[in-house]
Image (cartoon, rainbow, N blue to C red; front, side, top):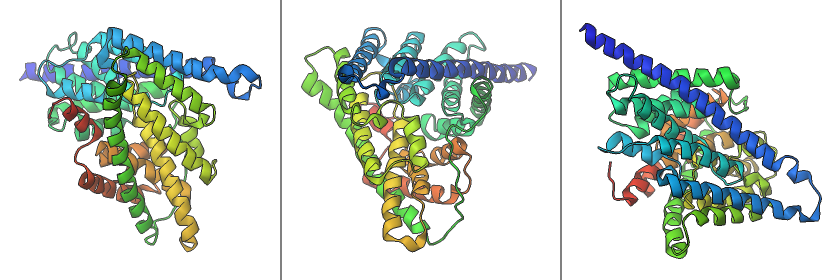
Length: 423
């Protein structure tokens, strides 16, 4: 009995150590991405030289080329968001996340995101956290490797978004649905210590600045319900687009080296980004702008269409980078547009499009991930906004049901099915 207790204690200690390490790595990831982006594009969009239009396409293309080359040359498993690789490591015998993959994922994602490709750092941080967990398990209590991977993955999301509760729930709801109660403790400890480390090193504040004076209004709930259902259709279409582009590249560009796909995606991104720079990169500032009603309706629609397209072609190129952040931005843009239409058509309901953008984020992400509880908790932790929790819950659950009716399975499940893997 004493030995068993010691084992459990050591596993919790391991989870705490793992959380601190992942928190440090996540902060370094974020800082380096911000530094490189600022280095590449500092004052770029205020320049007036006639030849500066060449700079953005060239930088995006070179960034995509470098990210694609180091990925395909050293660790092909580092391509994409990394969520399906984590699911494999948790559910398939013999699957693992090598340290080489973690290193390539770290630097490849920094390069691809900072150079302007429409991808996010959250998915990569989850894979990096899971990979670190796999490695730490070999040195501290060298058993229960999968438990360490799950703890590392949850800590990765907690550190990336500063959302410790959502980190734990995502592990339960999407990554490892058979998680036991004995595995839940380490996952919680890892997420808490990862988020605490990030708050210590980066700052203790909400990731998104959004407040609302919305009071629960029964008459407005049908509008939020419609938004949830419509975004389910958009989310499923986004999922199908991702699956389609993964077949499109090898079908039409299979004769050229795969690492050049990143350069192609970067070149297209850079050219389009000259006209719609709000669609470039991770898009945090764009998301803040949507939530603060900084864009006109026409611009909201343009950014949505461009961001959708650029995210799909970037993901299909197999450079490292996730779709967590882009999907939240797409949901906010679509939600805002639908809210603006509703406000115009139903002025007596006094609908604020920014509130619809907030709800749209959760509904769109739910339609893609089929993880409604994660979406609800994550949005609350991202903003601290409790006023909109009821319409958010309503829209997310409806989006989940509607999306499942249209097409079964999350994007991660369908990506695995595409490889012939059914978990």
